[in-house]
Length: 315
Image 1 (cartoon, helix red, strand yellow):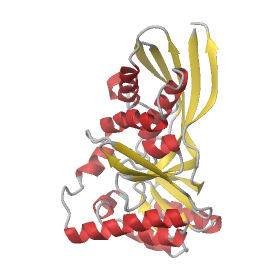
Image 2: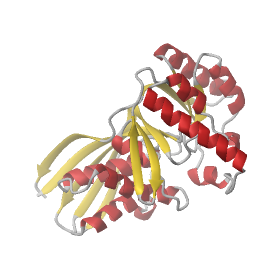
Image 3: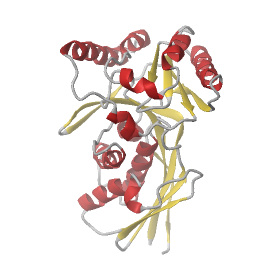
């Protein structure tokens, strides 16, 4: 017999401004849909039925190291068949690779009878992130993709994840321009060392962001979402980023930042009206440059991966 599980994993925004590699949030209304089938045997296959082009070689797909790490710890051979049904566009800056690896390990865990905790699934999914980030495993996308909401990676050795409360008046606008920024390229421009002055400034903002979430104070959140370390180097990949930020903040948005490694840009607003207006301005900014874009406006998803349906079938 074969156990079949179909799962959706949300798109995510990593870093949240000042929280490079340690903070991220899940988005409503956008994500990957992946089916996993498990039966007797030993092996892994991945079939892409989505409209997005994915690597044809097994070892170049982010799902592969995540599933292999999980099956190694499971300790018993199984034939695992993965089908990608719907895919966030790679290079979008809203956690495309994370959604794939998160959905795959979540569905596989369900098919195996849930032997692993959600936190352990994050560790497995991080292996996929390691593949596309030049060997650096990080959980700021896969964490919220699996757990939902806003998450803080307190530490990586061992992995220590904290799920933070989300204010009701916390709205997000994300625009994905039709340009591609590879994660490896976006990491290559980052400094390996920073001054103590910059470090202290960044620590204060990260602490302010966590405090704002805990107090459900969106205005403190907005003041804290300032990145002095990463965005100054990555904004070169976003055409007219400084001008875009100024225009969006003028609408009443609380912050404007690069989502993950880019090229997506997101704004946080205290109400849906402002979020909608901010999104329109971001879209228009790129349109005026002859660059198409996709726009998402909504709330943070308090739910991460979830099962859409499951079934048993004959081989």
